[in-house]
Length: 321
Image (cartoon, rainbow, N blue to C red; front, top):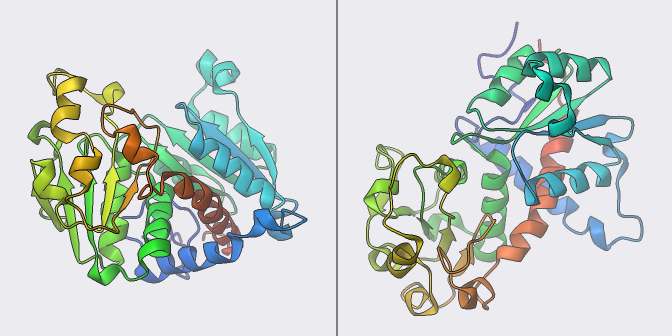
């Protein structure tokens, strides 16, 4: 019988990674600690470990991606897995084949793990409920719902620079309404015990229920980032917007763009993060993105180690029952 929690096996171990929501703190901390052991693999003469030797990892990206897809591929290869990137535009899905039929055919090709990005919220859950008990599913972003490995690598980045979550004020700024990253960040940071979590943006881009998730809500950027230890800037998700939620990108930058002058309101040692891709001159000024407080590029580097940890942990769990 399957575990009532769709991500965990009957022993309470991580079998799929579908969302941060509902994950025990111990599992999150295990992923972050395991990532520590992979952080310097790239500096070794042999840039791989044999943990997934003989395993097959299939990257199924039904939406465009640069950082997530590439870092998952690097992570799997550094674990010595066989990696296959499905060309969605030229696959049978473009001819009308259903998602689950595609999964069944790839499973017949001895797939062990699927890394899935899909425009439909819940698609990785659908796949996880469908696959054979020995197959693992990792959500690389589904619709507006979740982006769990981004949330984990953001938490890892904050821990690297700030150590103790319990004294931190973290401000998430921008299009929170459409952001799966924001949702995963909120869940992981609250689970790890961040002292104060702020959601900052125009009212039209702030979803209902943020207070119930433990966030303080601000509609003025200056108030929202004042005294913050960490600022996570988000891009405008124009591809997910319906209707005119903002007057213009220029006006958005004037009111919510992170500039050096506005960053000065945060703590002097505050760090600036961004999940990418960045829209310079819209949500962030280049002087901030490239400045001394930016840790945007280290985020990408840490993402490889975190995704190695996720792939290694799910692959080591006993099969679902």
